[in-house]
Amino acid sequence: MLKHQFGAPMTASTRTTVLSLYMRVFRIARTWQAQSGVASDTETERKYILQEAHNLFRRNQKLTEQESIRKCIEECEARIEIGLHYRNPYPRATYLPPMGLATQKGRKLRAQQRLRKQAKPIYLQSHDET
Image (cartoon, rainbow, N blue to C red; front, side, top):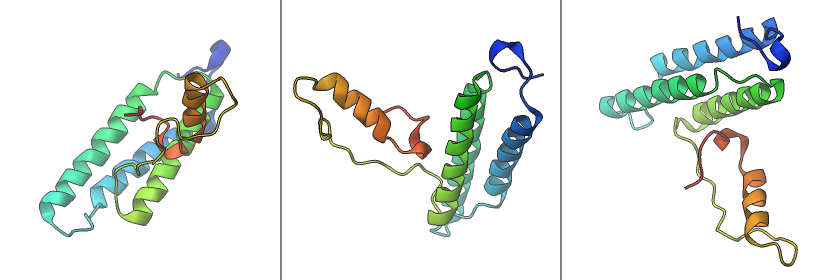
């Protein structure tokens, strides 16, 4: 049984939501067609969807805080909707230049890092910055 903070079991509705998202991603991958229409592109994108889902769900399976779980669910839902809308399974890039966000005087680098983290869209929360 999954547990969250303080040892109490994860709520049944949260577990159901996570499992239904996991299954939804696999259904999408099964029927995915690349926008280019090329069979090799379709196969590559299907493999990417399955591998990305497997990696992210495995990485987050031990989360215990309800807030962290909720954020992961929101990220998954956002990535599904964006992928289906744009017919592109890969995460959309963000274009924030280094030191490109306004800060208070004297607090440059740490403030920039904090602002960049806050400005990161929800669908990229699980990806490290390059």
